Image (cartoon, rainbow, N blue to C red):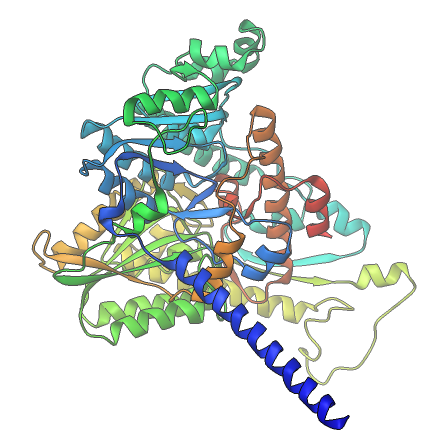
Length: 624
């Protein structure tokens, strides 16, 4: 009997081992299939399909693969600007690509400068004689900015197009904090450093309103200028100045209004659009209505890897909030970014360094840590060129100061030279419950800052003096970089935010231009011959297993994502709510002095983190 039991245990062990081996083999095979790259010869003739189910970002964040698999559903994708432009530029001269098709039904937006960069690449395709087609159920600001660069724009008969300038309301917690007895102790420098105002009052100060009005006005003018240049037949001013009258004149039919006012060229269902494209580029492999021959975006990217010939110019992207310590892509960790730069410099084969900045700033300490790493490249004799994307404000400007030249887009939000710190205390809240605080001190700073009794005058003076010294450091770094006096920098500093065009006039940036212009300038300063260099991306190596799990969870063809105008409005509301909640949580939970531009995020919202498919219940659950 014991022999039978032993044999049975052995058989069960063998069975479990075989099951485990088969499971591992299955995942290994699945990983190999998903990670395999197509041969360039496997690409067949058709339209390059850009079905943007997510956002455009300078540096896509690495999603949590387990949250994607076991959370609320697929994570919206972030498309890297450089990948999109590389794919589009490769399509321009390849005979297999007959057209470029934009499917913007699931497009969740991006920074204005980033979208403009992709738009310029689409313009080059049209100049090469190839058509660009766009389709969506409805168009709002970001989607229409991109679609305007198309040869033909289609919209669903049940949809339409409606655009509105940037702006809106923010939340102010001053009265609520007073009600619950929570006191926010603010230490800051800068008349326009409005990041702390939500915690000290119930409305924006007049200087903050004036500065933000001027900023939003300039950014909005740039948006209109780009769209009008790309699509002059669109009657923008009618729908912008008198939206209600315009919609009522079309009896509420937004699709007919869009057609009448030149926003779109044709109305049609998705199947009708697909049949139209099929007549241009050929039928698809299946017989479904609207099928046409198309080239998958990811396959096309993999088949068009950039060549690495000649000397190397390093490119490091610093995107997202600047934080202390380690952080993955999409957030600029002081340790992570500086280590990447130092490691790249250790190779001794870089001829220049280009720094792409897309950050509203953050931790002062982390900003200085990154600045020192960039300065090390300059001290080594490498030309350093800064390329500002959508945001390079406050700490984002701090890290830009070592640059030999600074490029910005007209839409770039920059400046915000100022710093602040916030500390809460709860003496009034405790008093409401009859709780008081008392004790003894051996020095004026014993137990300070006292979270129960509130910081004393000595600590307040020390903290404010420290912040003022940090501001002087900021002024000194900018003055040295821009060849100004500290008084001149202070006059355009004080926390005020500027758009790229005005920043150029003020001397905060050298030239207007995108990343390509910055790379060309770096090559020129390094005395490299044209087309005899390549760009080496300095970034954290992706985790293959995390990529594998993310790929499993990704849904590139979500059937339920079709945003009409009400869908776009609901998405903007969700974006605003998540934006406000995330910003407040970060500010309250952040330790240390901050060089950060909060109002910048009104202009460039964190659309990349928003899932348009989430409901109100899911949203509130994430908050609370």
